[in-house]
Image 1: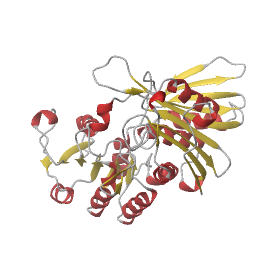
Image 2: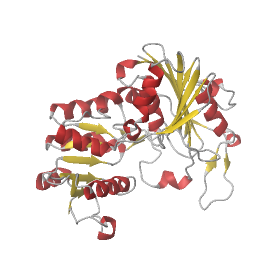
Image 3: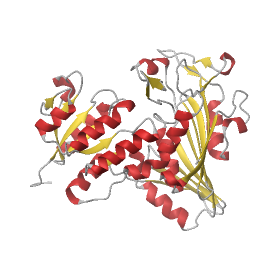
Length: 386
């Protein structure tokens, strides 16, 4: 990048998950691609948090910070319910956006954000990092070639472990609403949102119009408002099925994955690892690990060289239809004490739903909802049609 001016960036929300963005900005600054021009935080970062970076301008006022720094890109990693206003503020100042997922807590807010940003002439990248994986086009090409036969459906599974302190980390954690505003911080819509978006992407059903019907089953073992154990099935406009089963109450944490089922085989994609396993009739299994394009780097190249964005708002429309279905579904069903237990050992208490690891895997394997897979505590909790 010698001779090329680094793109000035402001980071909005630099603590919590924002630390990952700070580390990534540090990495890209070392490559000469970007320059951290400002940090927008309620409490300024201290020098130890900025190790390896020149101390940037800091302010809790994003509009003023953008005006004074002239930053061309804003990376927004703040509570879900703040995304729309911050994105519109940045766009009005002429800054392009990397907006953390989920981009908004409702479909209406998503459209207001996306339309407003586009009207301002700003580019927007949504933070679904798995959409930067080189495995995605490779799998699409393989499936299109007929290598696994006729596609029968796409399943995804996410079995993660979160302790009870996870829901005390911020006022909005585990909330459906806060102070009258939608938040929708549930397993499907935030921590395991990548499972939903990646499954839709592999099905080729990423736009809002690709969705015909959504069925949700939302449950909670923890003392929260939102779901921590849930599943969703999307019927697409061309008759396809995308089923996602997730939990934050697993017995053991596992790598989440998406599985494309065909009449003559299947493809399994562990999206955090960029790892793909192809299993076909009459052939031995083949595993490949792919590279990945960083979304901020892609945004920089879009701004400076016109590269196509990997995760613009238009390819997140179907995901936001799922968010809307979760938002408008009845509140998650509280699991009875007989359906969960406290985990053994550990420094902090956490709740486990016995058998959920196998149930999540069965959802991805059989494209079924929990109520269809024999979970005694599961009943359908919502259906949305287009």
